Length: 210
Image (cartoon, rainbow, N blue to C red; front, side):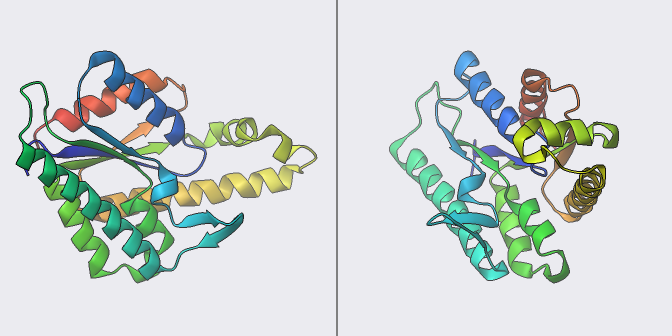
C-alpha cells in the first residue's frame, strides 16, 4: 500500500483533539501537503454515539464493526486511487482519524479481542501513526471548566475534584493501551494550547520512516 498513510488522534474529551484536528486540516490546506485527504471526526468512529437524540454506548462487537467498516472504506478508496493512477503532484491517500483504536481499547480494556489487534495490524500496514493528546494534572480543572462553563456553574469543589480524578484515570488508561498497540504513538501535552505547533509536530512524526 505504497504512499498510504495517516494520523490517528486519541485522548479524552478535554485534551484538545478537535482543536488539533482543525489545525491539521488548516496545515494541509495552507501548505498543500496532500491533495487527497480523508478526515473522519470522532462522530464516525467513537464508542459513544447520539442516535435520534439519545446517547448510545456501542457494545464491543458493534464498535468493532464500525471500525472495520471505516478501515475497509479507506482501503477501497486507496485501491481506487491506485487503479485510476495518481498524478505527479499527489503523494497518495492520506487519512486523519479521531478516536479510533485506543478509544476501543480503553472502553473495553477488560475484554481486548484479537479483532482489534487485527485491525491495528491493518492500520499499521496502511501507514497509520497515532498521537495521544494529554493535559497536566494541575491544568485539568481549568480545561474542564473552560470547555463548558455553564455546565459547571453551581458545581461543588468535590464534584470538580471527582471529574479531574476520572480524567486522570482515563489518561493513564490511554497511555497503557498505547503501549500495548502495534501502532507507533507519540504523546503531546496540550497545556499551552499551541494547536498549530502541535499539528506541525504530528505531521513531522507522521513523515518519519520507522
